[in-house]
Length: 296
Image 1 (spheres, rainbow, N blue to C red):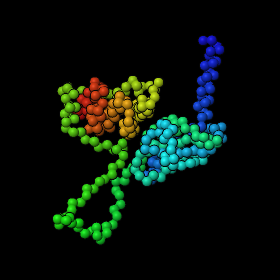
Image 2: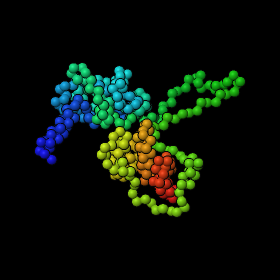
Image 3: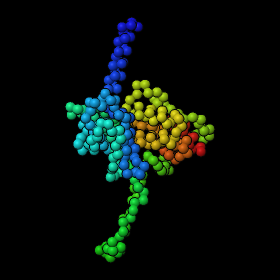
Image 4: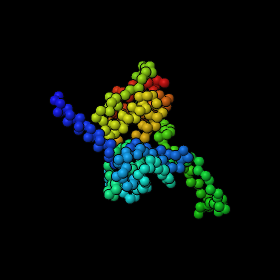
């Protein structure tokens, strides 16, 4: 390679790195519930000092859908205006909805730098308060203590008690209908197969070269937890992942990994359920695990 061409490539790379470093964007935005389950706490990394000088405020936005375009940065979604030196914010929410967050910089000329990058200045996964299982009972009035009679003179049946469950990503107690279980058994042979020695990982999750969007998020989960055998964390993050609208093939791979994670956690019913969901797209791979689960 000629020296002049080599120097040109180096200069372009350096200029791109320089541009990334000096963009008016916070980084490493994370959101999690507080220990007392009353707030959602946001934390992030401050911009370099050279950039901070050009920023007037930080705008915090909240929405029930993931932030991906500037049209979502509305006054209805704006929940706070912060000093540029802030690196944390506590959002006191009054419900149990799951929320996404974005933090956008307002420049000194009052313009808004509305570029949004997942896990940089927007959150990737929704976060919400865990629903309380035991709600305090209010005292009954004297009128309420009296039995209620209908026009026919019969006592009215009480309304059913509805218990609000915590986030299903934390605890999934799904049971498998007999019809699904019978179908799973029909996919297997009578031969007993020994326990698989190691988890299966698709080629798409063995490297991040050229991956983006759903593929990259799934790769990140598998790389961070699944490959390290952290089945509990892998299961938790994958449960969050499949709750969102995803590409069908990516979703099938996530179900396949959820099946394995639950298998290694000893949740054979859930494992079988997820392998059945992945079987349509990945028939050969899923059948091996279905047979292994049923042999337990």
